[in-house]
Image (cartoon, rainbow, N blue to C red; front, side, top):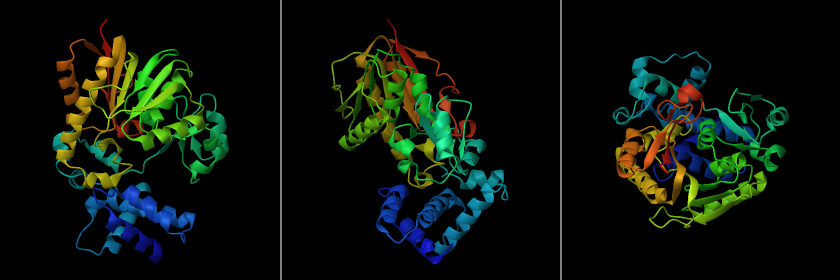
Length: 367
């Protein structure tokens, strides 16, 4: 690692904290440094994430520059299969101690956190083979039918296929949530926490652009991003609207289906976002669980009899998953829980799927 890369990596790490996550600081610093080549920027990004992925193995008394070198060495050796990890080290060093009390923190899950994340793409129906051929360096999984794993180093956002809407960068299990929702053409759906529209686009795709989707979020800038993605991907059967999660829904419409991809602690993304392992607290988890419960309570009255509500989070803590289910079902007696196909009691684990860890629950309103 040359001096410039080491120096910039150290500067980024010293600027990160709970309010300034590593990925945001990294983007800002790389954007501002005009002297970096594309290769150098990639090396800096890899070094920053390696530092946090192997943070539990670091000796804080050593200079930061030495810790960075050691972390990248650990990462390279682990990827190459040259550094097997003992169960004791995995249990002790991978995540903070409080995590093991808040979820099923298996050895397999913690080992999966140390692996490099896969780059998952979602292609338009019928375009996967062409996208794979044009991008090269792709692996075609057995399912879902429109998913790809990209293994190259191109800037995907500047490729013709991305600009024409042939594919989106979207995690495998995020794609699966849309498939579990399984909306039908002509139905009316509400994507209550739509964000930048990743799952809205899957709903639209499954609905064949027929029917209507209300896409709401509390942040206007996210809905503007959704509009850009919708234009690129040819999605037009939607309306976007601001909603803060309060008691008053954004419309009086009754829905065939409601998807609540709720804000959460993000524990399921820790293999992709290792810095968050060391900033999240138990108090954050408790606070988010209350937000999630309120979103469910405020959205459910908008469901038609016979309609379905899907609750999804990219986390694995008991408080935000199984405990939410218990609390929700205790309050809403007219809902029948359905099987979430392809999951283990609602969970999608990184070590099993190669995607983000997620939880999903599905209910139908009794007619």
